[in-house]
Each structure stands twice: as C-alpha cells, then as structure tokens.
Length: 244
Image (tube, rainbow, N blue to C red):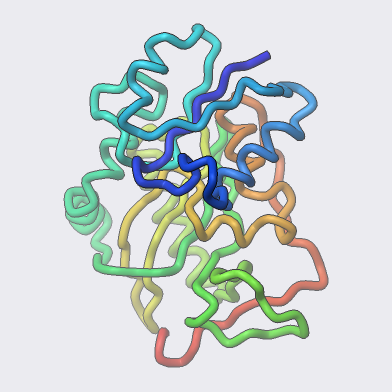
C-alpha cells in the first residue's frame, strides 16, 4: 500500500467536505484506485498546499507527493521541486524561452499535453477552450475544453520541438506536462508550462487512452506509458479564423 499526498490550492473547494469535488482530483483519485499495481485504498489524502510541508515530512519514505498546484513551498523537497520552481516563475521562463529559442511570448489558451517518460516524450493531442473552436463532428462537447484540436503538421512540429527542448533543458522528471501557447498564422507564442494535468486535461477523460491523469500517475510511479491514443470516431475542434 502506497501513501499518496495530493496538494491543491488552499482555496480549492475540494477541501470542503460539503462541496463538489474538483474534477481533476476526482480523475486522479480514480486513476490511482483503478491501478492494479499500486492500489492504495484509503491512503490517498488531499491537502491544502500550505499543509503539505509537515505531512510530507512525516510521511513514510515510499510516499508519493502529487501537487496539482504550483503554490507549494519553494523549499519542499520532492522530485519535482526544481521544475515546479521554474514553472512558478512565468515571466522568467518566458524570457528564457525567448532568449534561447527565439519564440514570441505572451498569453495563450491552447494546451499541448506531453507525457515525459524516461525514454522520451509522448505528445498527446492539443486541447483548446470550446468557445475558441469550430466543432467538427456530431457530438457536442459537455465540458469547457475539447480534445483533440486539429493542427497542421507544421504547427505540430513547432510545438513538439519547443516542448521537447524545454523539458530536456529543465531536466524534467517523468510526469505529464501541459505546454500552454497561442497559435497564430505564422507564429507560436509561448505562454507557460504546467508540471501537472490542468483543468483542461479533463477533456482527455473518455477521449484518450490512457487519459492524462492515468498517464501522470504511471509516470510518478516510475512506470512506462507506451503510447497515447485518441478514440475514434471523434469530435474535434478547428481554431476559429480569428484565432489563427
């Protein structure tokens, strides 16, 4: 049995037992419970970021810390400590990306999931807010984000190159990362990097195998993710003309 500590923002409604549980937390807990290798029963604990330090210090050596927030203490000693610090410094990371690879930087809403494994990256299909895309397919999305987002081969290669270079340069440990960008007609605008599945990753549940929360859990427990695939047939999004 493995002890798992999941850290969320201090104000997260999931900390209130009378409130509706956060969808990300629910998806991660489901992934952990469904794992036949590391079934954890009642050992999964959700804590506010400000409470994690002491709990992590008191945890057994085999415990796994899974922050779904960047607001963990800078001196919290866990495998993702360094990359969480770099991801918190949004302005600094933007400057570094611009100086190192010459990309434009600014605000974006498209997220490209990268399953970063010991053998290299697996690039999942991009995710976009539903209101920013034209829907192709008969099924209407019921969530605020949609996966997959249709991209050209050129756009994909630019995204994959940036994501791979960035994670290699940051010596990223295995996990699911979300590369947040804007895609313009002839430019890729870097916004930020998330070191965990964000709210947008909920779009992968029921759409992608394995979903991003299952892939994240497998990565944190040092097990391989061989592939990520979208189920077919599928409803997909195309960026509206004003967005490209």
